[in-house]
Image (cartoon, rainbow, N blue to C red):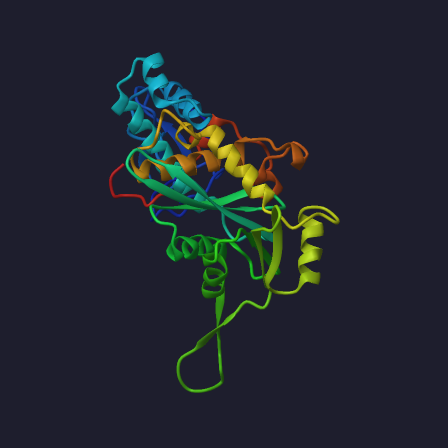
Length: 338
């Protein structure tokens, strides 16, 4: 067992959640268990990973998760590995839930500078699903997704809330397509409490450093892309675009569109005219976070000088392997029993 990255999950331990303290030792020879020398608590070596509670070989589960995350249908994995479909579905459920928790723990406030937003229309077996996603242009970091059965203002507000939670209050440019719900949702979400100096409630005012760009397709003799500055200063927007995209580049949402193509290539149910349509909204959300997290930490990007988006954003210093990602221990809501 590699105890280098194992920490004590006991809430009352003085060395809780700390790595490299030398307080974790191997405990027992038959079962993979660890012991904290500071508090005396014993716990499973798999605690905090997606493998906790599984009796299956970790390598087999890793192969199955990796194949699904790179576009292999579940039916093919069932046929090749000879496992029951419900067993494979349980592995993927664990991996998706783990990836979503991992994403929320590791993607904190960062300097986004420019964010692009777009949505994907996904045809399921019995309904249509809309998935709104956002990414930081400078680091190509995938910021998250919101899944709903309706393309309404609630979907736009939820994805804007995600961006609001991740962004530092610095000059921020948000670019999106012609859907009218985006500008109103951004104006509703990006507000900070402001004291009026009078007795009574505190009112909220819009961010001073927020800039909104909308791209609208209009038809004249042919389709023409019109670019509107909905909010903010074009001069400052131009400065941020020169830093994040390059000098004299055109206002666009091409980076988000390219990321949409990556998701369609990595998830069988996202492919157009697929023979493997998704069945449940929860399953789609789990797979999206799994692919998005692997894209951030495990996929080298040619436009980032062979760095991963997480490396470009300063979240890590190396490209992670799939095994390293799945074995990464999450900060637990630790129960009373190990």
